[in-house]
Image (cartoon, rainbow, N blue to C red; front, side, top):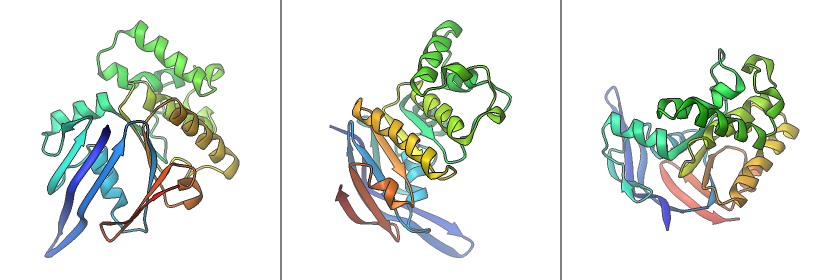
Length: 226
């Protein structure tokens, strides 16, 4: 069953008097439990595609089904609810809240869902343990290495048990050894049945996934099983 599906998705931007066609009729179907990557040069449309996948923007035309629900033309409040419940985000820059501890950063999505303190604290602690940070629960981001901060971000992405995990250049700010450790965590999550979509410019990262979708000039150039 497709967990995320684009049907003839198009996105255009008006830049002064110039119309930019960022996506030109993209159709992609991603199955539940699939681990795939999106690649392309700067300007290929991969960032636009990620924004649409993450319900951070709406397409100009076409449809996007997430978990069988058409989210293409939802309003801002509806999209916010979808992001909160159905999606987990891992960013290149981690996007942790500096004033919060490891445990508090992980539980942020549950706080906004109104989950009781005891339940969210318990689940966040279990996920911190999963990513190897049970000994750093009360540390703040500035006290952590880049790899540890990304582990916090991964735990935070999992805390709401999302349909899809979206990873934007998840190893982009890490050295090669630490990057491999993060990729190993993602691989383990995939083996547990998580659906993961990663956007990267690094082909060595992409080739650790099951499938590579190559974008060029807003179109799918190649869809390759690895």
